[in-house]
Image (cartoon, rainbow, N blue to C red; front, side, top):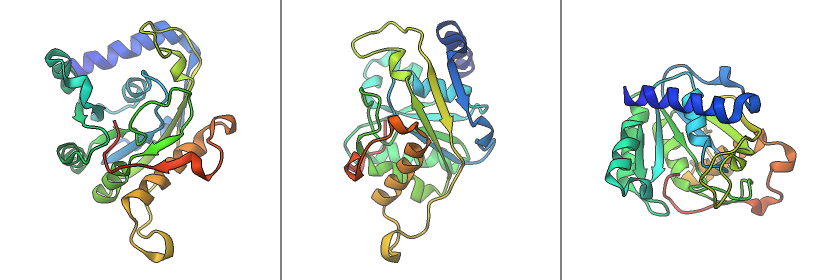
Length: 224
């Protein structure tokens, strides 16, 4: 019941604040059942909630940074809305087990492999290998989602939402290849890079990182 109310409430807020300025393309590409790992770039505070509530499934789960759960009431509320904590920049085995259990149960898991927001609105920085680990060990279908301009809804240093043109673009589902370079078994780092390359390909050209160094693979923690 709490999760259903949350979905309705976020949709209403999106309508009030954004109106017709929120555009979502490719929703028909999302599988309606089965284990799905949704991965995206993280440029704004609002995009996890916006992405999750507009997906036409009620079994969407979220990995969220552990700091959000320090307050007991907020932690309880996040858990009731299908979120569970991950300690960033660590090999959080408890979070990995929870995430794999969600996927093993045939549900949808929303993950941001960058692990934190990119305040300038670009996909640049450490992509956590833990996201690749989840993809490799779950065998779930992977769906890339690119977003841009969501950072303008709640800009850095502000708590008040404001109208902005927000775009979410959903790509085609895919599976990871079995092997990486030179025929070796695919590593979690290679998997994470492949996944984020799919996300970057959905962004407008002016939003894509430039050069090979723009996409780097960081530690083994899953995304938050």
